[in-house]
Amino acid sequence: MTDIDKDKTDYEDKIKYYKSCLKKRLSKERYHHSICVANEARSLAGENNYDKKKAYLAGLVHDVCKEDSTKKQLELMSRCKTYIDDIEMTAKALYHAVAGSVFIEEEFQIHDEDIQNAVRYHTVGREGMSTLEKIVYLADLVSVDRTYSDVKKYRKLAHKDLDTGMLEALKYSIKSNIGKECKIVKSTLMAYNEYVTKLRN
Image (cartoon, rainbow, N blue to C red; front, side):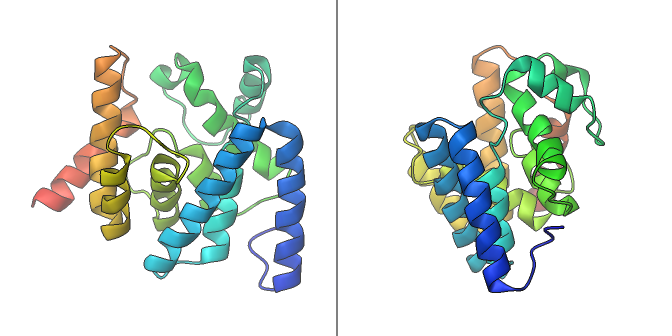
């Protein structure tokens, strides 16, 4: 089991193993992104009095299935314990997150449900996200390798306050999907409504 063993050496050995696996599974660019997200997650964790080791690990493995075939992703998704709505099933770009949550449990023996959920929801978000889920979602959006317009704005907001960062990140995601005339996953809308209610009231 890898529920973030408190033994430093054990943790470091596991990180080395996961990194070696990721190097084999991912392109250089995707592996670099994974390291950047892990570092960003660790930084956000430190600022929010959260377990930095756990955040780093979750960020590290968040894209483990990103470059798997659609067939492999669907095969993993068939064993997912969380609900997958119809809109998610029409968006192949979202498959890797669901597949990754299954993969890390089966192949990496990561049985920590919070880490599994952080991987599962790092693309769509959901209502009632844990601190770790918020950290990984935002770390993926604002990691140092990201170069899209306004990334500095979102990075500043994420490091100022997780909830404010989440609201602005969800607005960005929804606007992006609307611009592409893509359907919006229900869990994303529910998360947006939650943060609007929480922060505007």
